[in-house]
Length: 132
Image (cartoon, rainbow, N blue to C red):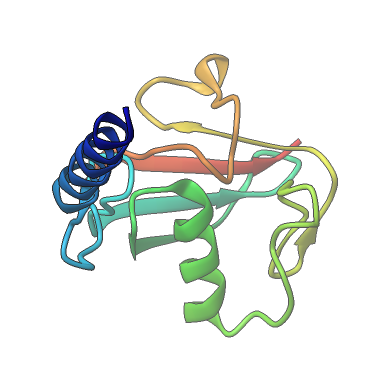
C-alpha cells in the first residue's frame, strides 16, 4: 500500500515535469497574429466641421488610425493628447470637438469607421478624419 502511494507520487511529479517542460517557450515573446504590428503608410486628410480640407499628409503608422493621428500630430508639433481617457478623438491641432468621423476617401462618409483609435488601416489608402 505504501509502495503504491510512493509510486503514484513519483508518476505525478514526472507528468508535471513533462507539462512544464512542454510549456516552456524559452523566455521568447509569442508572435501571434494579434500581437504583430506592421508598419504601413497612409494618407491622412484632415477636414474641419464645414468639410473644408485643412491638411493632407502621408503618415507612417503601426496599422491603426489612432497611431496615424498621433504620428501626424507629433510631426506637426501639436502639443497635448489627441484622445481623451475614453479613447475618443477630441483634438487635432487647432480643431477641437467631441464628434469626429473617419472613413476611407474612396468609400465615402456613409461608410465611416465604428472606432477611430483602434481602426485597422490598409496600407496606401487615403483616410479622411473630419470634425462633424
